[in-house]
Image (cartoon, rainbow, N blue to C red; front, side, top):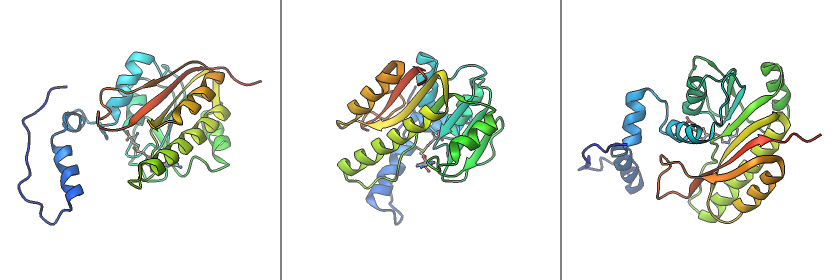
Length: 217
Ligand code: SAM
């Protein structure tokens, strides 16, 4: 990714220091401008594009469930990669997206797996999760919360994945991601941690990839 000349904001215009830092980072992030130019709804779209290129997470014609879909970047990637049915779920509203069905709701809703089975007319071939809870700024708390969400996403995936299906979830480095990895190793053929180039180097964010679900009998 090539870098455009650095933009520097001179005045804060009533912004807090952290708002100012965020804006500076956005303005100087090559992925943000590429997402804008290429029509992706989020810079996060590049993370899935990069991971999928190397690992074939999204099977052509496969049914995909995108957990934490807003604003829709990952669902856009699934559609572009020629998935079959794509269903995006988020607590927040997501603008209509051609080729995908959007459900506004909580994926932990006990009715959700059954509802999705009906919509897909069966199971899913990949569950992709870029979900993140609101951050508190307290590293340990944020780590525990995102890991809890990833574990719930895995339970959900195990309920709905077809044999051979794939699972991706966002985690934060910080210790307990090893436990999740060990749990995944029992039920998937290939399991690894990846940090795609589009994931900011100064962030502890990474992804667990689990390919080839060995469906429980
Ligand atoms: N992958 C998205 C994209 O490319 O546009 C960005 C996802 S964003 C980083 C994380 C999303 O997870 C947020 O929109 C948040 O509302 C959602 N989320 C968090 N907890 C959730 C839950 N329990 N059920 C559904 N969505 C959830």
